Amino acid sequence: MPRRLPLLDALRTVAAIGVMLYHVADAFGPTRLFARTYLFVDLFFLLSGFVLTLAAEPGMASRPPLAFVRARLRRLWPLVALGTLAGALAFLPGGTPGQVGRLALMGLMMLPQLQQGFAIFPLNGPQWSLLWELAVNALHAAVLHRLSERQLLSVVAVAGLGLAAAIAVVGGCTMGPNAEYWWLAAPRVVWAYGLGIWLARVWRRRGPVPLADWRVALIAPLAALLVLPWVPLGQALGDAVAVFVILPALFWVAANAVPPAAAGPALQRIGAISFPLYALHEPVLVAASFVSERPEAKLMAAGLALLLAALAARFLPFLGPATRAEARTARIAAA
Image (cartoon, rainbow, N blue to C red):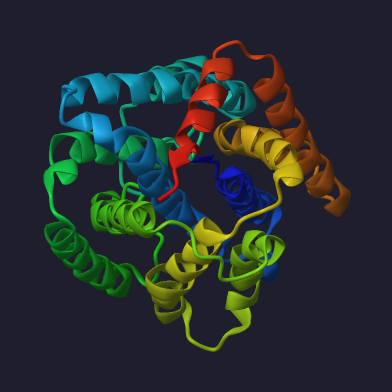
């Protein structure tokens, strides 16, 4: 019988909200409560590896890797472009048209700016992870899908060792968005995405085994990262515990949770805003921070980002097929 995983759709939106709240604090001033929700990016990669394994890996052996990468690019690029253009509008008052135009062109071509001391995508910071998403998608289609579970775990273990070393060097799991240490995002991405592939294969083989109430499973990752800044571990050790233990464990709980059928449509509607919110929220926050730094401006900016994401999910034509593709991604054959 077919089974859907709408909870993972909603979990993706919880993660996008967590990243947005981190950027709210970054744009308007530090807020300790959201100081570590940037780690939801690691959950995104874990979730992506899991979901794409269920949806696409069975067909990868008979499909050229480039075809899969092109399909992923068609999925990601329209909102990348929209986010870049929104970022250009937000930054135009603070820069010259030539500077902003050059950065916009680089963003549209998904070319990182590797000048030390700057974000590699200055107009829309979260774009760094979408570039790495395409890279690891290509690796999945070309190599990872051919590996046995044991071989895959070996790759994941090596990436994990590399990530542990990178966290020690950088002082936290923050590598990727900035030109300094941008390349150290490679083990970060391969660890999370590769682990997602392995977990999906295990899940597909044995089927879901509920471990917690679905509502608890949905909220637990956010609760854990909100509490993390108060745990006396230091940033580097706390981030390592989160990416190696807490987030994989809580993701596994969510992947095995079974919400009632009546909750499925609502969870899918919630999930539909995740990618638009992730791709568009930072330009909205930056523009709002230029206008006001008052506390109510933070709430209004976050609310506006959510509204724009909901409108994008509802009305932009290129998101319709993506929503249906995600629905197919969530449908698998239960053992």
